[in-house]
Image (cartoon, rainbow, N blue to C red; front, side):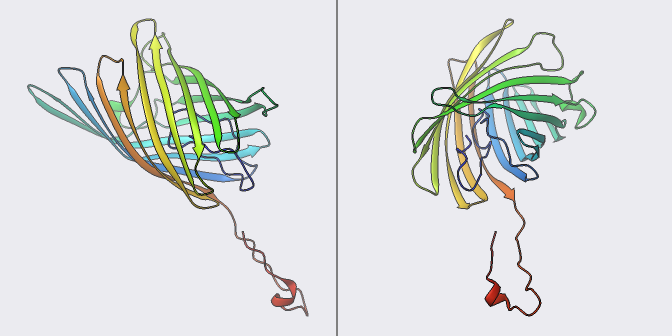
Length: 262
């Protein structure tokens, strides 16, 4: 989903699928972690997927450039008429960068590009692709009003097995209910030359616990897809800040000097 950056300069990539174009401040770290359950049934095989940890680490490298690393701990169960199989472990590490292109100027959107590369050198063997997996996303947003923000993406990604890329598109409307509460509704889909198009919708709620910590919940379902799909998740986004402790000057009390917080 992501919130429009304000005085707190906080913007999370959780919990929606579309990536907001906002970039972290130089030198700042942000951790985004969650749990997730999904259920996919294609008529013969039911796949249940649990992400007990879906961790994204973001870092503001320089002005307008952000680095990120992502990995998950997954537990998958596939069931059919003959029985069930289980796979568990870490997924391959994905590394990437987000680069600011332009900030919003009237109708011209806020624009960034995201480059990701999933490495086949790490993670559980069953989750590891044969080749490195690149992906490229164009991330845009428009602040429509003080309460509404529209985020939209287009991207291409490979799966590590085929030379034919998947195309991704997503549109997310974020609504600020108050200084603490935000909701979103999102539509997104995937298509490729050799596969049927699939479309999904999700919605969720985010709560700002403080200026640097957000909690969220979300649900998603499939529309116009060959498989029945359901997803539910929850998580947090935490921007790590250092507490600036004012040291008293010689001969000056801390009360006289004043006190600064975060």
